[in-house]
Image (cartoon, rainbow, N blue to C red; front, side, top):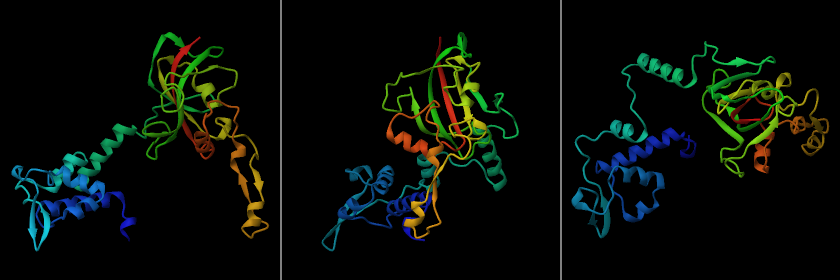
Length: 294
């Protein structure tokens, strides 16, 4: 495996090892070589307090050996250890002494972040779309109902790989409105009359009963007409691709033809539209903040 193929964790370990060798005085660095170090490696060594401007402070000092100026680090402090360095700079050290304890600690952390996979912590609409409230909101300020015009901020997101219910845990945003993550104003709202079929079906049903100032996640799946994917055989064949590839009988399909651009919410700019065109037929999450009901 080449150096370029090493995973990020191995690269980080190699940088820490290199810094440790310098701190122990095993490796010396010329000023020219120092400027050629990758930025991240210089940061590791600098964070260790090895290279500075004051030798009186016990930092690195310069020596002339065989006519060449060498930057040499002092000996490592007696209480220095890589474990302590990693703990201080890469997060907390593991609090387990055996494999069994580490597995138990990992299970506890997963439970805190993603919830119990055996517990149904979400609700379902009449069509089976899942939803979950993260902030209940204030019903006295308004409740979303059919016939009401609602104003929402939203994020359309991809579910994290470790999510057990399709709603919980970290998720990556494809596009959004009202959070200052797009080119529009931070306080922008999408205002739509609920019940007119303008939202995707999962949202038409999942928004009902939501309180103002509440935050809710709704799972939008492509099947059962819950999402943006058109019903039936909607993708057109592109036979020209097969001809170009030397396979006259071959071809491909334009999945983008299956995207229903009439159903809200929709992305605004070109980049968001391209990202969404590649993901609309997946199971997605729409995170919603209900700002107003009229």
